[in-house]
Image 1: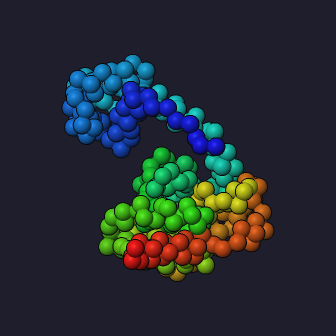
Image 2: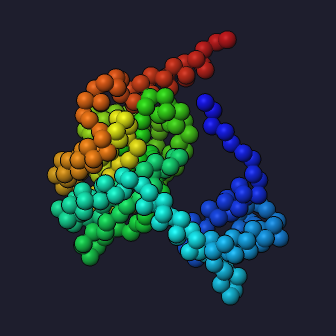
Image 3: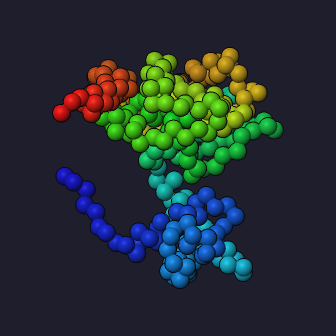
Length: 284
């Protein structure tokens, strides 16, 4: 049955404006929001005042708006309702203690992987990240895991949408390269980010399966490149795979599900994309 939607323009606009503040750590003025959104300043101002009155925004004495406690409360409530976060925490804590590096748990949101849990490294030199932040699927270890284990049709639909923007000199630059890389991820059972998303930061990630045999989450170990040599990444692989397997078991996953599901997502998606390309280039 098709999902029913309602076109509530005012609500959509308000939520769209609110989203602009997610990555605006220094805040935004009404004029800046108007410029970003393309809406008149007067219209933007009305929305911002209403959002402030509902505690979703705070406004300083100089007219700069920031996210308010209403957003924080909703975000905390949403995180609390994620069973995967609660079930994963003991295993993330153990991994954090074993490795002394930053550990993340992510879920997919659109074309990004979003951090829903994070445990900081105990080392003085550590990476900066925050719960709620998003990283691209194609150039992060957590994202590549989510791509590699997608159902074939879903992956075939998503790959053409990826912009493959260069985040560093090591970022994957073509769909063919990405497809080859994802096949390697499935063979190995984990993915690495070798300074692909951000220079000087390396990461290794493994999948988390749910009760239906789907991979909708991934976990990672992240640290400065000076501590994350290829040798160390290989040493970390069995640790993160073990943690991923235990979390999957907590979620009701049984290893036998994987063999029952048939062809792997990447291989099937590659064949589908090739078929689409051939059909598009064939004479009519």
